[in-house]
Image (cartoon, rainbow over the protein chains, first blue to last red):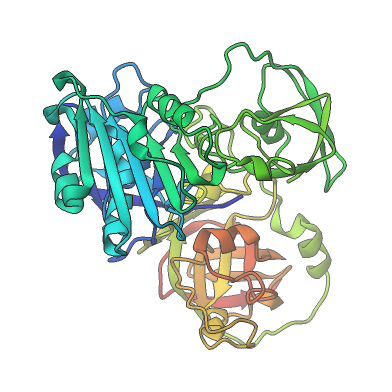
Length: 313
Length: 194
């Protein structure tokens, strides 16, 4: 578990990057410096009704005075973006957690290929800033419907210069994953955007190792055919045995038994509720843990077990 | 944890002198008596993990806590576990020692600001470790020492500072409120006879 401080920040500046994307600059009303972060990090925004939404930081990691996020209005989304668009104005207070990075830049790369679709550009803009500053070779492929519907395009053009390649579908342009080039050990590929973009790029990188391909997931992509079954969880420290019924998550049931546990997205993408386990066959279902850590770590919000599991809370 | 669950019952508190630590100490004499202290800062947080906010005055409610604080509302990290948490105190002297790296447990000194340690009251000249099972006055409010506070890994993670070991045995005092009222920085603190 990693606890993160929640701060009441002020909207210093709100601008429309495209007609349906707001770009927010957030500052602390009292502290001159915010907790540090690195490119790829996101923050949680707490909505007044208690829901939590994640947004990637798109500003400059070297600017400790403010956080920048961009929010696309998703009329059919889970409600966070509509709330933000309707409610937030300059001067408003927003409840924001300290950043967490589930998509860090590999420090040892020789070449970086960044591929963004639409609002997925946000973490990759921060990465472009970092890569530019450290003098690393990179190319940023940006897929959007059109120039006027491409969020943060002006900032990108300024940061990337000739390292930016745009693909506007309304002009008949399509990004071809072949442009990533042949496999080379020092190359890292970062993809953030809609699932079909992730799928298209990943399927074209079949010979590459898992450590070289980095994806941001902000959508639950669960198998709708998954049928949850009840199972028994044993708490290693106390010996307590708790039945998890089919219609409840491990996280919910543990909270009912008075375990104060952190969580955020509760859809297996943020990593807040990570927990150790042993003695059990776990059905992971999350999008955070790499294969290498799944043998003894799970996500309480979505992971389940066959028959039984022992938890190290 | 949803901070906004409607109709959530108030948190369960163990009465300070009924806590196992407090109930043993209250029946015994001893401890420092000739002291007089002062309240330096009051901080509350609206919910678990929220940054602490400094107050110029605060209302203490018997059996409950400081109005607006996460433990008053039952939204604290440890609220699901009934305990003595109406008001928590820490000594400025302990924070000063950390800033001197005394004892030298870490690579260097640690600056733990009153807004960061997550106890409600920062006090000076008050021997908190002697106040388990004792009544004392902060301004017009009367507190009862229930149990010594214990450092937690949660704080270490939240701050990103290795404070767990340096706070050992000087992490403060968890108190119940015997008589409520308004407190302000500058209020005098003194021991009351039981």
